Amino acid sequence: MDFSWTEEQNAFRQSVIKFARQELNNNLIERDRNQEFSRQAWNKCAEFGIQGLPIPQPYGGGGSDILTTVCALEALGYGCRDNGLVFSINAHMWSAEIPILNHGTEAQKQYYLPKLVNGEWIGIQGMTEPMSGSDAYSLRTRAEKRGDRYILNGSKTFISNAPIADVFIIFANLDPEMKPAGVTAFVVDKGTPGLSVSRKLEKMGLRTSPIAELAITDCEIPAENLLGKEYGGQAVFTSAMEWERICILANHLGLMQRLLETSARYASQRQQFGQPIDKFPAVATRIAEMDIRLETSRLVLYKAAWLKKTGRHPLREASIAKAYVSEACVQTCLDAIKIHGGYGYMTEYEIERDLRDAIGGTIYSGTSDIHKMILASLQGV
Amino acid sequence: MEQTSTTKDQIRQFILQSAQRKGVSTLGDDESLSQNGVMDSLVIFRLVSFLEDTFNIRVADEEIVDENFQSVNGIEKFVESKLAKKAN
Image 1 (cartoon, helix red, strand yellow):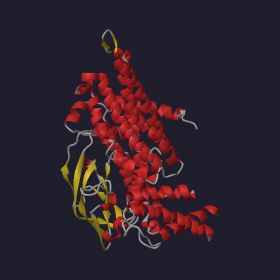
Image 2 (cartoon, helix red, strand yellow; image 1 turned 180 degrees about the vertical axis):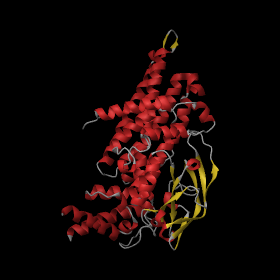
Image 3 (cartoon, chains in turn purple, brown; image 1 turned 45 degrees about the horizontal axis):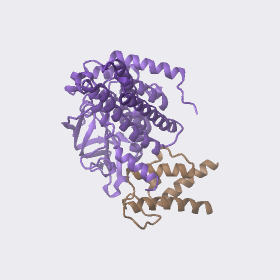
Image 4 (cartoon, one colour; image 1 turned 90 degrees about the vertical axis):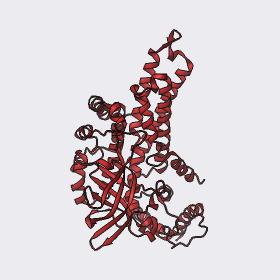
């Protein structure tokens, strides 16, 4: 086994950190308070090549393999303190770019991918509905075929990026009697009559990443906007979820390292009872546990990415990574706040925001409970 | 023939386990797994993983469609075709 990054990957990692620190951390407290997405930062990330990392060069991307992509996203999480921005980028990459790359026609790839990569367009996935979350395929949005058109009707909720999106991957059931097998994916462009953002939602964390509900009423789309095959929604969703569950928490690794370093530095400088607080075993132990959590999180996430790179479907490893890293990150945020004491609880120290943001990681892309259920079922439980 | 029977037995056993979790106790080999409620987003993930591990095959993303996974017989046919391609 070789756990090392190549020289090129390490250099790329450093360049991402430098870019993120210089360009992406402006006015964060205020933007978090106002739920303000930074289009400027989005465009800078696209210009740097973040959104195009896993997309092949003919479509404008960088053509990076999944491990290099994970490496870059980890660096982004380390250098960029706008976790909402990074989450929006993740949602865009895994739920819009990857489905189009893996299941789109050549015409769809040529049309959508360059603009999704260069930052001009923002993509999203519309799967979750008020009555279907973890049980994704029980969705109620319907598609009806009329000649060479499809008519979509339904509603979606908790749709990340919806208020700012240009491209929507909408899942609907083309034949409800077929149940999950009827699920079909469609690419719907912003401005298509019948598709609208019905209500913006306010959330606890990741507040710089907008989220909303969608209303879909007699939304008529041409046959060429079918994504994949009719009744092929499961394939589209499965491949998107696999990429997402492996990669979406790579930035958490960077966040955990940042919090570890910040906390260790603070503990060595903060004096109480005539000595630095890192001399107290309770504080030192907490720092050691943050380090253990970071290392084990890296191992499980890198392994899932490596398996994916070998062409396997790492269901078990992706679930372990998703459940473990998300929970580990929350605990590390809590430990960082405890080490910083009252200062850690204050907004100006920006750790409480990391905690609020990290909690989202235990919910989106399959809750920790769902991933543990998957893992238990793989053991025959 | 013996290989075919073994393949189907293993697939049937896996599907039956998933079915029993949903209260489905009997299952015909041609019965639609979507329509009887056995197949959902989690079972699909598990099934793909099971097939890759058990039969040492690779399932491409675009192959995860109902026509390949619609019944025990359908899954067996899909696996057999993958194994045949591998043998050639």
